Image (tube, rainbow, N blue to C red):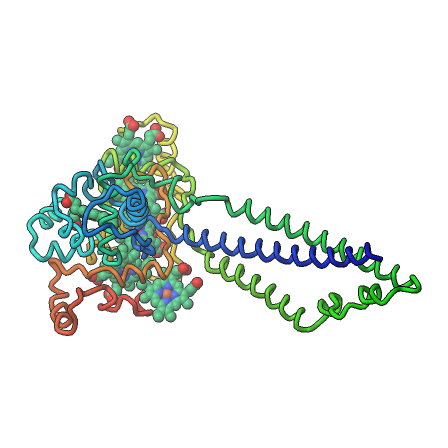
Length: 438
Ligand code: HEC
Ligand code: HEC
Ligand code: HEC
Ligand code: HEC
Ligand code: HEC
Ligand code: HEC
């Protein structure tokens, strides 16, 4: 009966092996989900706090050509700076090429951490920059000195591609490194099914063989041991603690995936629907430099930015491109007095209140802070998350715009008496529920 014994042994071995494989594949799945999360958090609008990647500290405060430093610098640049800067051309901010020659490192570190403070401190160079760009760059005080040095090192010594920023279909939000999660999940599901079949077959085999052995007479004690082992799989599988553990694991998995999909509901980052007329911001706002306010007349006046009516298009298109089929749609809209059915892209739920004038006029924020580089978009795309966390995050980080605003003078003084930190939006009530919720 030596053969029989071998069967039981290999059966146990196979069981252990299968369970091991199953455990491995589920932890792989968990790892994959984690990776996905990290890529979705990487928003291109820079208002989200990107987890600062640990940069290998360069020796002292010197620019480095070490590949590890350049890689870290590249990642940080793409996560935090790319939406406003390119190396060799102007985007929202200046081209960064040769910036290491224009300014010394300590100045750069200080400026990148606290641009607004540097400008307000009266630094001539920084003031001139602000006069030219009329916009504050956000604070980057979450970056360490070494991380900033790695970014500048990357600007100086790294490879920069063609220096164009990619807003649009190639948005980083959508890209994922490594194996696609769909494929991985399919492989894992396939593996699990195969394992289940193998397990089932082994059980059947064991059961038949045991039955057969039981019927045989005159078994030696050794063989009897095989038949009646002290540890029995059947008992274990039926035991309460085993069922409890399995049920717990299963429930845990279901809750986890449920939670993840719930949290993602309503988040439409990257949404870029096709519009009834292929209106291009790249052409109108970019190439022809038509001011945003010319069409979005509400941004400085009230809550809503407004989508322009066909009449505004007619200011130009009664003379420009009159024979284009797209223009016919505009003429039809004007003649029939029916609005063009633009598909809305940005949409907060009704429970939240957002006011453009507060942010653009009072806060002095540029559209790019929240909408990305619209001037480069053929098709408008939602660049920011538009979640509560996104709003709050910016309110925690952004200094109140005090310039030319007498209303804040008293508040600023009061705040300065209490605290050395600059007055942030959170300090004027930007985190109060009632401010954003009706
Ligand atoms: C939201 C847009 C924005 C982001 C994000 C941003 N910057 Fe800027 N940056 C600007 C603007 C605008 C200026 C011009 C100065 C001003 O008006 O405040 C500027 C100026 C600079 C300057 C001075 C340039 C010169 O010619 O002297 C440096 C250096 C710089 N930024 C580095 C960075 C780095 C590094 C990052 C990422 C960690 C970054 N910036 C992220 C908008 C941005
Ligand atoms: C010539 C008129 C015109 C100009 C100039 C213009 N826009 Fe628009 N904008 C439109 C029209 C029409 C739409 C609706 C169609 C679309 O989404 O492309 C729109 C849509 C948008 C949307 C998406 C609205 C939504 O549905 O959520 C944003 C954001 C936006 N514009 C921002 C800007 C910014 C920022 C600028 C300046 C850099 C600008 N626009 C300049 C006409 C204009
Ligand atoms: C301030 C002037 C101006 C306004 C306002 C304006 N456009 Fe234009 N538009 C232009 C110019 C200039 C061109 C480029 C014409 C060319 O390529 O010769 C253009 C081109 C276009 C084109 C591409 C031409 C084609 O053959 O299809 C479309 C579509 C278009 N505009 C739609 C609109 C819509 C919709 C509006 C209103 C929301 C609008 N435009 C408002 C100036 C304007
Ligand atoms: C602080 C962030 C922020 C800034 C700055 C900002 N927007 Fe918006 N924008 C939003 C949000 C959030 C929505 C969605 C509002 C809603 O659904 O009620 C939106 C919606 C829009 C829409 C869709 C129509 C509407 O009014 O809801 C347009 C068009 C628009 N923005 C244009 C602009 C332009 C042009 C500028 C610059 C002059 C600008 N935005 C600046 C956050 C911002
Ligand atoms: C890019 C940064 C930024 C983002 C993103 C942003 N805000 Fe703000 N918010 C500001 C600034 C700056 C002010 C201060 C304006 C001022 O001086 O009154 C402000 C002020 C406000 C206020 C008035 C607060 C007060 O106490 O007076 C409300 C309400 C508000 N924001 C709502 C929102 C909502 C809702 C969102 C998200 C949909 C949002 N904000 C996203 C920068 C931002
Ligand atoms: C700066 C603006 C802002 C402040 C302050 C704010 N919220 Fe929100 N909140 C939002 C926005 C925007 C949404 C909708 C975003 C979404 O659906 O992801 C939201 C959504 C919610 C939701 C619905 C969540 C969901 O998934 O539908 C609840 C509940 C909520 N907020 C509670 C609160 C409470 C409680 C506070 C005070 C502690 C608060 N909020 C403060 C902007 C804000």
